[in-house]
Length: 159
Image (tube, rainbow, N blue to C red):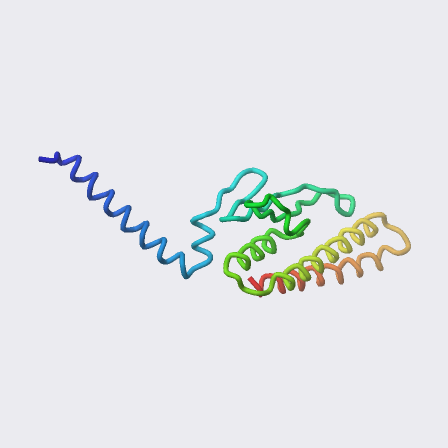
């Protein structure tokens, strides 16, 4: 005859198995749940199913910036390089996982974001130097910030 402790253990294990089965079934229809269940996070990368997002620190507009490379883990091949936003990288991975279109569009908006970020940082640097064209640099930095915001919004709409 099982002890009280063994019975409780059996009940808990049964509940864990039932919950696991429910989560696996729900994940078939919910990409965000799939990502949450299959991701592994380290200091320099995030792995989701067959894709790894490597975090790469690079010089950019006179500063250090994190960029993201997507690697297909089965071939260890970089399939997307130097994405400016983690959101873009994760969005692309989700598109691969679901087979949905829109990867090229995400890349385009990520490039727009990267260009606007470079422009913003460059104009901000010029504005800090204080000189004859300081007001022009501040105005251009403001315009570049708007482009930056617009590009990120376009990416977020497509996730």
